[in-house]
Image (cartoon, rainbow, N blue to C red; front, side, top):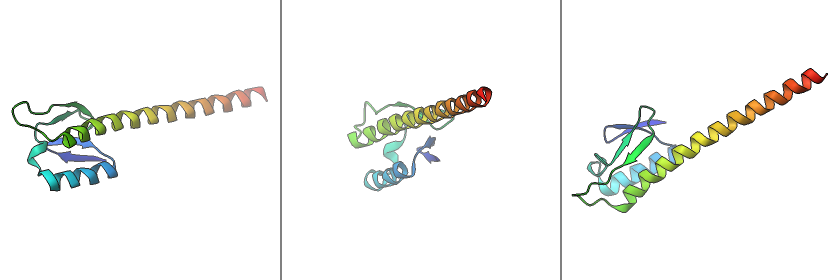
Length: 98
């Protein structure tokens, strides 16, 4: 689900968003500003910790994990589409052999 964090739209699962809310309670909203960039689909494309202002590693790891999870979700969707295509091909082959 697309959410807004630090003026960026980001695609988060329910669990990721709940964890974000816990981090926000602990560190505040300002720590997330300028820390990451997303594309139009809400996918994290870069994580950019501030060089002049230390950032808690848990925050950096959260966004790296979100980025990794987003890619895994896309890969799962792709695999599902390939399986669906494979099943359709099998069905067509079975029908043509009858």
